[in-house]
Amino acid sequence: TNAGCFNFQLDKSKLVQKGDEINYIISADLMNFSSVKPKKRNIINCQLISEEYVGSIVTLFLESKDGTEFKIQIPERELSKFNIQNGNKYWFSWAEKNVDVLIED
Image (tube, rainbow, N blue to C red):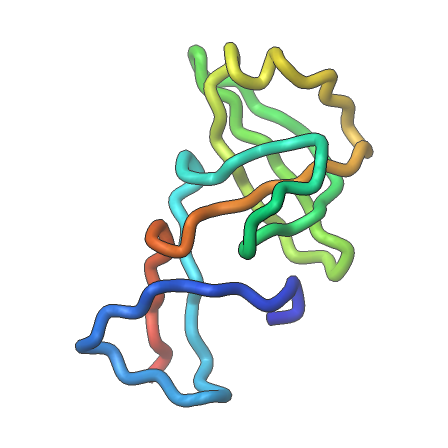
């Protein structure tokens, strides 16, 4: 993708060829957020644009260097470990097993 090269586990019933257009979906609450680069395969470095608080859950709005936008949901108590500020760079990552792939027809 323009945002990077990522890995996922594909259901054997889905046939994907190199060059096929797919939608790569990870639930916002299954993302890992960090201020340091994680030692994982699926990672993106993004700039924090804004955050939205709903109860004890915070939705972070981030943008990668190519302009791709991402949303991550994180409990407020977990976010309090970070000194987050709009405009700062952060990392997020996810496990291969947490990806859903939708294949374009």
